Image (cartoon, rainbow, N blue to C red; front, top):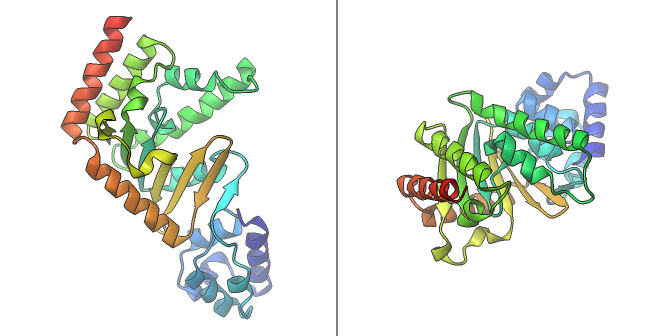
Amino acid sequence: MGTAYGDWLREQRELAGMTQQQLADAAMMTRSHIAHIEAGRRIPSKEDAWRLDRALNTGNVLSTFRPQGDSTIAEHFKSAKYLEQQATMIREFALSYVPGILQTDAYAHAVLSVAFPPRSDEERDRHVATRLERAEVLSNPVSPVVWAVLDEAVLRRLIGGPAVMADQIMHLVRLAEEGRARVHVMPFGLGAYPLLQSMLTLMWFEDQPPVAYSEGQAIGKVHDAPDVVQQLQSIYALAMGDALPLKESIALMRATAREYEDHD
């Protein structure tokens, strides 16, 4: 994501004899945002690029050659995974399976065991460990604030067997009842709704602009453009309005877990 752009920004900053903090102060930005741009994890807005040009006396270069639109990352969640660890608020939408940060160990093993081409046991275990590391953001009782909207298909899709599903769903129930995460279900009876196209993660930060991440087969995109992020936030808000309330969602999850327990 904008690695060459970030490298050039760093070179110009160093030529100007400025630290990241000094550039941030001159451009009315935060040091962490500058660091993310230089590392290729973020793309500055048009206004930020203009201020960087002014601060570095680089004419309109940073504005003119600012990477356009969204960035596609070849390795799923490479940039988004890093940003996830920095977020103060995360809102997830899942269409087919439980989002990574909410997965149990057994559920993660089941999801990651069906890759094609097949993974070796060692490679699969590495991926599971990485996924469970992501779940550690929930070890802090306050931050990040986590909301999840799950299509009912997430609860009904039998991944790993009835016992694994029952345990995974009750994990979601516990998180919701303890107030660590809000979990809402989009019931089958609702029919079509705007988020049906892909999985979506929205992230907010203390000292930098929000981002969105969407994922499909063999592709992941970090959405950095403010207008795109705002649009995806609005679509998520609409979906949240159509989802079952928290208490009803918990009741549905409990009932579904009991069905799996009885089946097992």
